[in-house]
Length: 409
Image 1: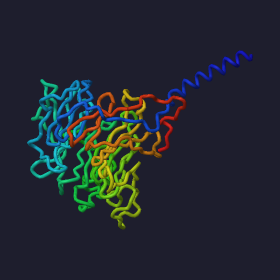
Image 2: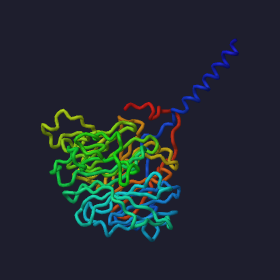
Image 3: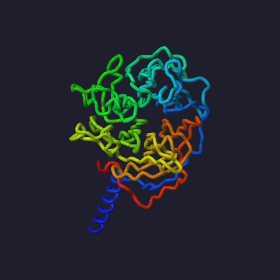
Image 4: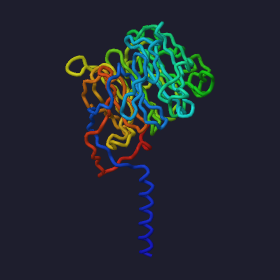
């Protein structure tokens, strides 16, 4: 009987470890060292975004603010642009070609979407284009289908980022309409598309349909809105593994913010602008009372003196690549002015502790993700693309940490 008991214990222990192995992983270094020294491509003019088509080609697409989309294929920048919209937009201040997103079924339908400011009046245009039927390295410039036209009262705070969520809907970042301090009172107004994150169904109609669970559907607010209270969301992303949403919002005069929405939670968040700048009162009035605001996951203060003046956040991505396991599950973001790069471990949400990973002299306009989940840093000033890399590839394995499945929300 003792022998049978021992065998049973061994079997149960083995089964327990097998089950637990699905929910535990080796611990990561608390402060992994990173590098952006490797330049994978150069010669770009004011690059603003880096993305991929998800079609298995492993090509990298780079958006240039003056109006062109360039392709990096097998480490080489192709001489001809994928699409040239320079005649439709104008590279002035914060205006230009600002966003690009490929349809999740791009390999089959050839659809992709752009966000630019119109040369005539600065209005935001969101349009769909189609790849050429004869050349996969070129888009059809005559295939434009305009989805949205949004007037812009000022020349700044256009937002501009586009991304498809894990739900298949297209998300669109819209700034508050510009000026300082939200003079047009758009941030807290759900009847305008300004100062909001939009969410539309590009497969539901000739232009777009409204997802049935959008929070303002059937109310006094605009049906396209998913969240309000944003000043100028400069890059947002979905964690390709967990589906969580991270939004970087550029502050006014004191604070820069990262907001977080767990996957599967409903829309309707109010991020506070301009009642709040992050978690701090800005233009607080009676209309701000009794409103349920969503605080940032983390924020950092502007620095006015000393080296590396911090003043404008650039959102990034959660690392899900395979080249650098020590970086797995860390969210990276930066500052356009100072070139600082921060990260935090997403397994620690909501008690994240961001650390300064690197101080650079880059004008970080965007981070980017390739098909394999590797991350890149884009230098707007220098026109270069850098791969984000880990310096120390040794990952400690002497203890384990419970995974994101068990984190508190």
